[in-house]
Structure formats: structure tokens, C-alpha cells
Length: 239
Image (cartoon, rainbow, N blue to C red; front, top):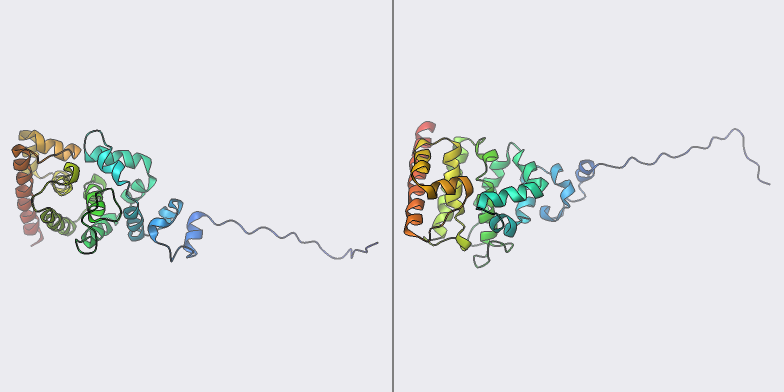
């Protein structure tokens, strides 16, 4: 027989409460992990800078750039409906700052130029997808003039890399983003051009654009000229 001490008290140990996703992420468990390889359930817990890195590493490039019915915008919208982190990033007030920084960091020395836009980690994989991201209303309507100038300057740099050639699969990201910057700033010369030129209208509204014809090339030249004039106005406003 085993005697029990009636004065002793049996204490049931309560289980440790489980950490929620952000509490676990805050423990630093993933500090040494490439952001893009961290499970997506933790992405809302990331700083905006790290979220941009994670998203850029995982761009659904083939889906976004080529699966849309009607151009780049429809491809983005398809992905936005499929991937929660698109909306999460749109809701970050400082997202454009880090998107621009990421875009500027992609150069022709460190990133392979011979890879297709859907092949990670090539130059085109990052630049083509980032251009579509930065053409979105959620980012551009919150942009400061200095951010717009910084972005437009970099778009011209990336366009010059193309050396006048068509983008792969006819994707004209710099032209699309430039046109949307002016559109969401209600730049009247662009709005007038949309009324007069169907190609420019389709570029702005759908991201559908080709420079395979003389009309397309002329429309692209018009976008570049309008953008230069718009930048001059931004500079004047800053002075």
C-alpha cells in the first residue's frame, strides 16, 4: 500500500499558451532565413522592407505578366485575388519607398540579363514585375513628388537598358508605369492624349501596348515626351 500525504496539493501544470504567428515571428526564429523562403503566414508580421524582399523573391511572374486577358493590369488583378500579400503590401503606407529602393538595386552587373522575365533571379524577373507593381493606384496616389521623380528617373534608366528594343513578349513596363504615374496625377496632357490616341488609352487602362508597329513606336515616344514635361513640372513645383 502507498500512503498519501493528505496535506499535499496536486498542481496541474497549465500548458504554455501557443504563440500566434506574429509572436512566433518576433522570436527571431527566421532571422537567418532568406525572407522569400519564410512561410507566407508570417509575411503580415514582417516590416515593409522585408515584405518587399519576400514578395520580390516570389513574384508569380508567369501568371502576372502573361496570364491576364487584356494586358499587364489584368495579370496583376488576377494575382491580387490569389495572393494575400499583394493586398498586404498595398496597405502599407511606406510600400512605395521600398519598392523603388528594390527597383533601383537591380542592375545589369549583378543580375543575369539572358534570363526570361519568368526566370528567377534574372534582371528581367525583378524589373518587369516591379514595374507592374509600381503602376498601381494604391501606391501612386500616396506618392510624394520626390518619390515620383526618383521613380521616373529610374524608369528612364531601365528603359535605356533596352536600347530601343521591344520588351520580351512585348511587355513595356516602363511605358506602363510612366503613363500611370501621370494618369493618377491627373496630368491633363496625358488625359488629352488618351482621348486622341487609342493605343495610349489601352496602355494606361490595361497595360496593353506594343511597339511592333510605327503607330506603337510613335505612341511610346509620346509617352516619353509627356513624361519629360511632367517631370519638369514636378521640378518647378519643388523649387
